Image 1 (spheres, rainbow, N blue to C red):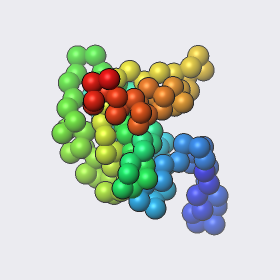
Image 2 (cartoon, one colour; image 1 turned 30 degrees about the vertical axis):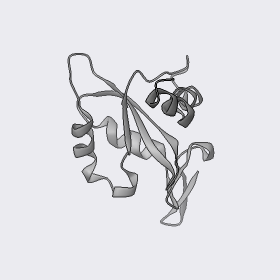
Image 3 (cartoon, rainbow, N blue to C red; image 1 turned 45 degrees about the vertical axis):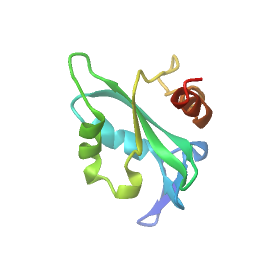
Image 4 (cartoon, rainbow, N blue to C red; image 1 turned 120 degrees about the horizontal axis):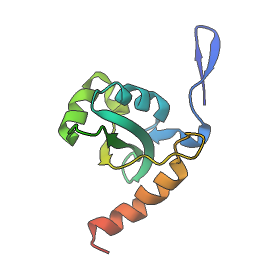
Length: 125
């Protein structure tokens, strides 16, 4: 996705990865870069999950460094420096899959944590 700033166009993310939440465009790479600054986070991926009210919400899949601990509350507190609409609404602690070239496998994450999968988990199916 392109962003116009100071008369220049910057590519900030893939168009298919853009999360539209409540009419605002979120670029996962910006949120991922912010979260990677946390000392306990080894790796992170941000994907969009369906939401009845907002259309989509940002979900952060976080891999914690070995020997470190991290809670959802700590992540939420760390994210207070982000604008409210950019803060992840869901935090999932799990490995972040990457392909052999090191790219995050977001289609795999969307399939693993998509709305249908999460609803099934919540209902014990």
